[in-house]
Image (cartoon, rainbow, N blue to C red; front, side, top):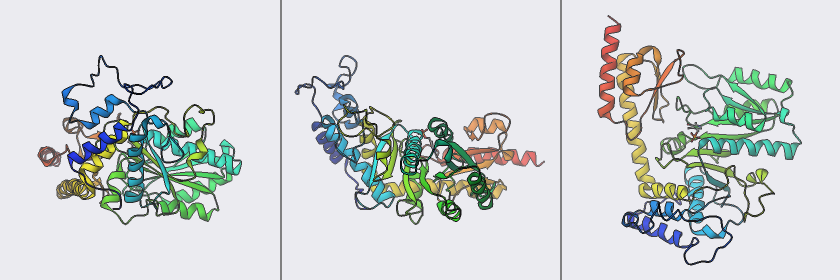
Length: 415
Ligand SMILES: *Cc1c(COP(=O)(O)O)cnc(C)c1O
């Protein structure tokens, strides 16, 4: 870890204060033209005593606007203090977690994984249009059937096709012969440019796609492609639990990555992360955004700088080793559940480096799923799987009674 450091509560507080003090101070600076403001004073009293020791809440009240992308070109100077923190977070994640070389990536805090995935699809669609004179009809998205539905939104919004790639029912791995056929058929049908969405932790299974499979087959058919990693769920686990992997920037085929800080990192909602190799974000530059200083090349316009601060604070509070320990506790707990399921003969999927257990619905009566809040893969009669996501709040104390009830049910149903 080159950039990720653990800091004490006091150090964190000082750091945020320093950053906030470099932002615009509406009280003491004349700023007639800035439509931004600190939060309404009648409702959000900035003198409230409890704000003193709460740097995150203080940054919410001060309300920095992080519009734009701060890792390239110049940004609005009014909020330069906290924009620095966002820039730091992006570089830390790209370099320390996703093995990028220093200074080689851009990134910003998006509203969530959906926006970050849309940003990627938008960027690559424009790339193929601008660099290859592609038409919309010639561009297509490839992603596994376990991919998050935001890919469907992306295809719809960007007006390009999406082809679903089937996976093995047991291993959730992409079926290579089927992908081979899909690519050949797409090529025959006039598709020339491919956008690959490769999962690093699918929402339902926690499965990790192997990017080499896509690369091998697209190369075999001589087709140009761009690859995005959807690590919305897995981004704060998989690179930690499985540091030897091919799903990061050390893989030359990986061009961009989505992470969600509001999932595993437990940041407030509105903290998706988009990272991309330098030289790509320019493809979504909006020339008309000329009144914004710097470049507005993000899907969202105005957005709260407090979100970047939240991410920075959580990462700094744990430090890399603290985070590693937390992840390992969750994985240990996950393995503990799996061991009991094995003993009961229950069939499930679990990626060994992830904290999701997805159980075949045949073992689970609906009532049990309801009582314990298991999440189904469908909300009608076609439920095939139920998942448990072992997070902080899912402790052995809650898992134990679930396993006992499941055991009872299985004994009864086996007569
Ligand atoms: C949750 C999730 C998304 C969407 O993220 P939001 O933050 O809900 O927009 C995308 N991809 C994966 C794999 C996810 O788990």
